[in-house]
Image 1 (tube, rainbow, N blue to C red):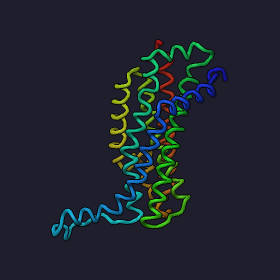
Image 2: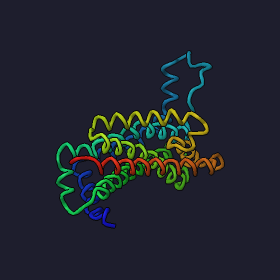
Image 3: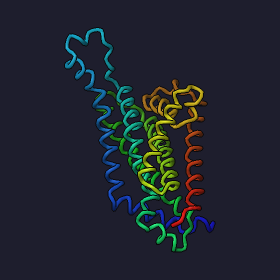
Length: 261
């Protein structure tokens, strides 16, 4: 397909830049810390609250210190800090190259705009996949040390579902970066989109079609509570997240086609 000519070369370039500019190492380190801190927080937070509240802790329901609490902390941290990291990763993907003039230099070569954007989207997905996998591995190890050893398969599912949710936020921000040509505007739109879709997810009939609907099933699968997972809702959340990625990628391409370099 001529529109994707040069895709493999551009993808290698994007991954090399992610390593050279330290985006990949820094994001990996951040996610490793998330994986480390989440089970530790679940383990020691009840004791910290008891010590801080003293006699006032009587009658106040304190969070449980168990594996499910550790997974919940991981989901919370990835859903918040991880989502912001995904937005930061994508916000300058197109606008940054437009500002520096490197986009015009790259596209002066025998490559197409679809290949240019596709390479960026795939590279972002790869970086997020590596970081999310590291977070899951570290969290699984510390959950086993502090609480109990849980089946690896459930944690693989958790990592895959969390990655898909983060990839959806990144694709939304990539669209904003291509549409506005401004890194600041892309970050703002990505953040607003994150807030808006999470607010929409409060509606029971809507949440199962949005990336936020992946969090609950991911937690249940990692906690070895497969019976708590509604297969239909999980399938619709996966489909909805993939649709978000597809629509954002198509929107980014449509905007980028019309943009002057």
